[in-house]
Length: 360
Image (cartoon, rainbow, N blue to C red; front, side, top):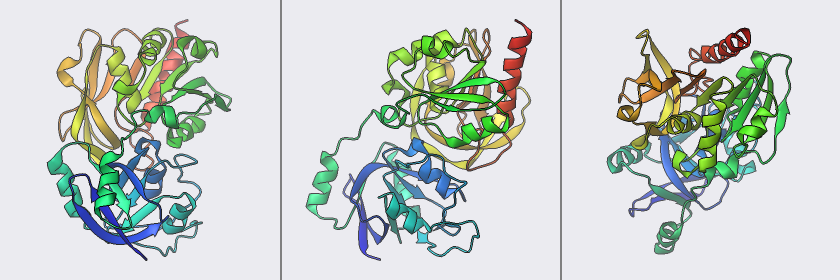
């Protein structure tokens, strides 16, 4: 392996060994605490334009297989690990992590003290730009400082055209803000007839398909960077058909109903977050990929009520509308990777659809 460096905009440099593609890259630096599921994380489009540090020391031990993709073409900018396991005995593995990253032109670095980097990110408590470079010289830092990260992540990852995922059951429209394939897999298991639409779809575009329900998908970036027309679409759709919002969709649902969303000091990325269901006090563990949170005091209790809260920092993890068949969660109910104990939320969504059909 060749010598490579991870450099941060504050002037810090970490030396390691390169793997994957030999490309130079720049992105927002975030960390993920998941013990497994690196393939799903790397291919999840919420990490668009980000460099991900894995806190699990050994990454790559089960290779890459065909069943764990969350998108066809990953848009992550780089991968940082402590130790790279480049030999896999997994019988369903098709590629090593190193081979896969080379194919996708994604650079990686191993041999980095990931605990030190994560500790630094927690202390800084803000968005941190970083680069993966062959030499940590003044030119590399100048290039890093000069790079402006885009705020149009959703526009870059959302599907440009509608496409179907056919089934024989209820008709569900999914609005793609950076869709995880895990959402589609859960809908397929329930025989849903799915149509995926771009994030720019209007309420009229959606209703013209006569859906039984609508899902607002996960996605990257800030909800405040999304056009106001999306908020107007949500305000209209929630009054007409059952609505289920996830991740970024949850944040947009909150904004559409008068709540505020704030940036977290340190992003939550992992599959071990304890979350309490308010009405039952039942504790679940769920997968998160969260850079923003709904401000609890901004939730108008006459319009929304809080259904889930994070036990680590008390942030809002779920909302439900008091007047319309619409609800949302901040965490990822499909897991992929992570616990599967929240997959019943997809059943709850379909039950909401069936109740609406019975009331017609």
